[in-house]
Image (cartoon, rainbow, N blue to C red; front, side, top):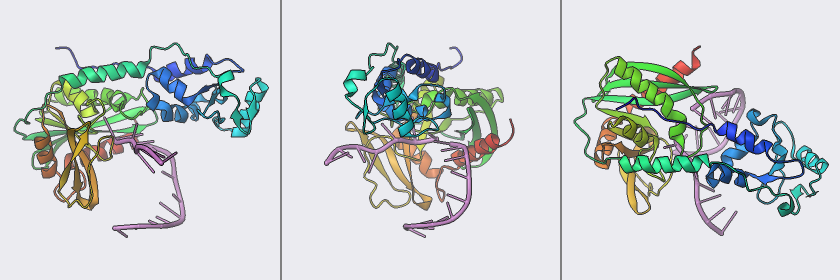
Length: 324
DNA sequence: GCGACAG
DNA sequence: ATCTTGTCGC
């Protein structure tokens, strides 16, 4: 079996090409661009990216809301964008392109990269094995911090009773943006490098704890599951925020957990921890929900986060602040 | 009015 | 996640 790797599409390059293909006198919408990328849910990401300095030199004034409302260009105002559109021959009435249909470009030729990633996630999900965890003596915890466009991943080796044994950090370029449900493509390159470095050092972990979800994911392919399948090793996901599914978290006591249900299936647990935090625990790979819950409860006695993950967070953050 | 989407 | 001052809530 070859070295575990992940291929990441160049979304910024695709977006630049899409923007540059919109001729003067025409407009498109955030939604249409998101669909061209292969996922309408990426529209908020499109809006954010177009207002960032990365899109500085692009004709972002040609992207409007689905209502026709003119957007705001990087470093500019809505009025300035409307003036640019008017100069290009677009009729703008009360800050809205009117009628939108007359100017609308929507039929972008793309390979829909996000749709391809969804298919890959479905294939990953098919390979997930839900089974009891092996006996856990050592735990590997993974987290990543960012500095500019560089990811700094930390691997912390801990004993089952929460003693820190070893730790290391690795750096990797962050090529993929954060888009909900595609976290793997942003963080896995750094995680894979960190796990490889730990293996190189001869550190053995019976289970990997990942800062993110396992099967608690629309396509059952959160970053913990994705990592687990690529490495074929037991993983457990622990997220600090809610991604999808429903859980009744009313009146939970510390240490208590409730099922998270998605499409009528229990895919994880919402767990109350110290300081009244709610964690979302789910099996990644070669783990089951009971085992994941038991492990995280044991590592979370008197703390808000599982101790090894807390360390991984601190180690990666510190390394990201320090000069490379 | 709906929904509120990990890092 | 990261950028960042004072400040609202348990």
